[in-house]
Amino acid sequence: MIIAAAQPPTVASIVTRAVQPLMQRYGIPGMAVGVVVNGRTYVLNYGVASRATRAKVNAATLFEIGSVSKTFTATLASYAQLTGRLSFADMASADLPALRGSSFDRVSLLNLGTHTAGGLPLQVPDDVTDDAQLISYLRGWKPPYPPGTQRLYSNVSIGLLGFITAARANEDFIPLMQRTIFQPLGLQHTYLDVPAAQMANYAQGYTSNDAPIRMKAGELYAETYGVRTTAGDLTRWLQANMAMLPLDATLQRAITNTHAGYYRSGAMIQDLIWEQYSNPVTLAQLEQGNAATMLLDAHRAIAIDPPRQPSGDVVLNKTGSTYGFSTYVVFVPSKKIGVVLLANKSYPIAARVSTAYQILRRL
Image (cartoon, rainbow, N blue to C red; front, side, top):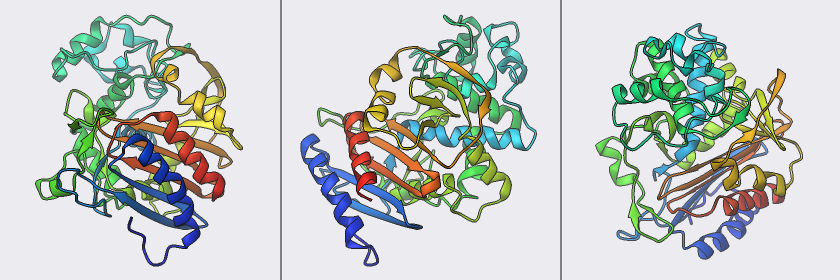
């Protein structure tokens, strides 16, 4: 464990008491935890980045963050709307002429950003490996539900939103993200393509059965699960989402606008990728909202009309998983408090939620 000298022992002890039993129970090789509290940020590192090399997790260690990547894609699309490149009211086919005459004549960009497109699948089909095949697949797709009536979590949905956002900018998605979001935010160790010079810092991931593994790039990976970053950078992203950084006003508004609430499913309100709860929230509510059924099954989506405007006094969260890494982010904007959990092993979402909740309560 590495703790900066300026960190109060109370924060370190709270995090350590929560994290060490978690690592022991699930055999997690390494973790990095970011905390924002009382206007300050803390990063605590535990364990090793690789069992083979025994290299310690440190400030430069890169973790795969899985679907937390989607929060960056949502912000990029939000920025594009503020700068006039697109509107969330647009139908998806209006922005991709190749989809005109398809089911996407009735699917809005807002539907894509809120998992309410009508039942797009969780993953891009295995036989779809390039953009031409993706468009061909989407042209033939038929929604099992009317758009805007059911929430079904989908990489394809947010991936298509990112694809369209880049198309409207007439730029490839990765450089557009780097130029528009990563660089202005000062995220100096956040990548969609990890440079060769940074590969030594890239943690080795492990499956739940302890097999070493790292993410493989696939169609729409950059838009949906492709970000690799450090705990420090992801904690800075947390600060940006709580309006704690001196950012360009349009960028800050783009970030904050992703916190608007559009659909209700049980206790959870679906924002642009972020998942929102009333504050205070119970552990049971967070566990239910992050249960496997919310990931895999369709749930009735009740439209909030007009949409719930961004509010500080809510709880926002997002999980992220790849086969070898596990991430969880939760924060309360009005309290300027939040937690980031990064691990280089696949372990249950429920354990992430309960650990972060425990840390927040004790802080």
